[in-house]
Image 1 (tube, helix red, strand yellow):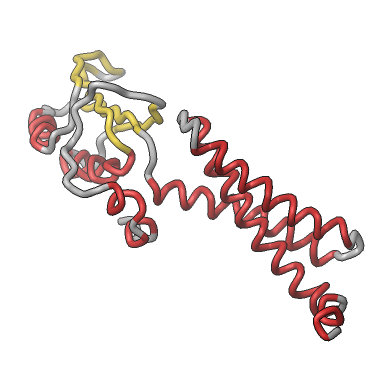
Image 2 (cartoon, helix red, strand yellow; image 1 turned 90 degrees about the vertical axis):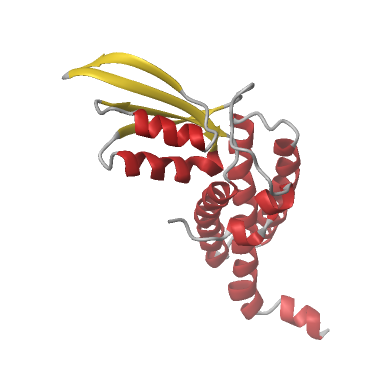
Length: 200
């Protein structure tokens, strides 16, 4: 009877229940954000799995809302959980560093030192001579894993702090030249220290 009285109390209805709805929404929206990113990058097996858990959690949250349509605190928790879940989902995706990107560098400088540095670290490169708005330029292309992006950007800035570069997502890439990895899958993708380390 004490348990039933607690679940029927105002404390549960206006404090505990909204908190649970908030947490549920953070979880399901985070999964949904990551699922959409997985879909856009062609992860055809992981995306449906995340979708299953996402909709299950969502049904539980909306079910609690429908039980008491007069509970304003539950509405606020539902909306707040949606907003926070979006933020958490994007943050997790950035920490996971999934997929490939193409980095394009356009420079008027002699880029031989930059090319030598990137080649020394086993990054594949394509170089083109082109004409810019104010004269001849060199365009460098390199396709790399997203987790390597901060390092490559650091090399570019070391070469030229004011260099123009752009970064675009790549859905698939094959037969490329990439740095050799000696660490295992667990350390690369599932290690909690990697997921939550601070970015420089």
